[in-house]
Length: 617
Image (cartoon, rainbow, N blue to C red):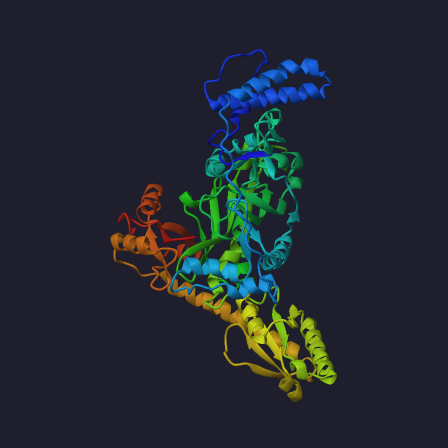
């Protein structure tokens, strides 16, 4: 496949159009090297096809001669630069490479540079790394384990609503995107387009590969899915005939691709993982309720599982999903006061039903257009998790989604250790492991003999493990183990091993405590970072927003809950002037009518909403 990155520009290899022709008898000299290269590629393809057809050397000779003549006209390519000398051999280490990597990375303090701190946390905890593919990341095992734990919890909540799993192709016919006008406008600049289906050796440089001109995709190229509304709704017209086929609720876990210029791991990458739900109903009320309810499911999930409190709201018209009548959102507030959209659901009305001709026969035997909704969350949740809870030591993970909830570190006597000592330690570790697993706690025993105990503690703290248990010779003599949580009380707690069920029960209590502390911290941050009684005018607000950069931590402006008259033009002016956007219209404040009797902080006109403004990732 050959891929170009923008629907608004022609493919780089558009010169391979089906109308391009060359003949062996042509002696005209092309006006540019680009034209000549095009003709050389076509002539080389012709020679190859003639040989494949079984023609003799004599029959093919005129075309070969023409190919050589055309190559002779081309300016010679510059000589390749000499290869650099090979790097000196690396010294071997007594520790594993991943361990060395985790320990050696310095984490920038949040107060110094919040943006760099975020990147350092990801590197030090080995969640992901940059990939050779521009704008994409490699999700490492710890990052993938976190995503799979999130996926497992959320998938159960989704299926409990009667939603069925499915999977649709990643390649979407280009003309599908054009059927819903707002949808194509919203995604055209982010699309990667597949234009060719085959590669061949470059006749100018045989070590290179180029798209085969003969493999240009007809009648139109494909788009790598930025989202799947179009291909799913094109299929629903075959699945939905009668009101008895409704409601129809589908969900797929997949990857999508949106060509991003500025990327940040987990928060904004060209390719990312997500789930996308697509539902169809007989009435608009059902579809809107589905979108609204799913937003509540997302909010509950993020609070219960990730321990992140969010603002639940509705997007402004400017910030809605392309093709939606209404978009519901949950907005997190990070430690630096910036907002983060953590999950959205969309009431689509009949837009996609009309665009793809999805109709059903109602109970009165009349044909009606189907109503729809869609909703999704992505690996962006991991970015929100990092920025909500982590500290200058490293990653902090809520126990409910931590791949390793408890790490057990045995402390041996070393050379002085006897066989009896080893047997006692082995028995104690067996008891601890069995009791933890009986409480369904995910546990790992770190018995690596090539690392000092302090280095182990340091590594697991950086990787965010919620609870550490230490067992040393003196502890065994007293029949106890020592427990230390990643956050919370500084002191260690001695817990008796011999009391049946004691270790498992106490570990569970401590994990529950950590989960509660993290949610309370998120609550406090949300309250602290949202200004609710601001009345000092737009000029000062704009100044605060302009100075509030992503790397700032101390003294961040945070978000502002302000009276606002809904106006798309004014909203765009504010965004251009100070980079602030409307994160949402919070549902609670707007349902209470808190905006009534107030004037818009920007225009001075009668307010229509309470709007949450601020900078966002």
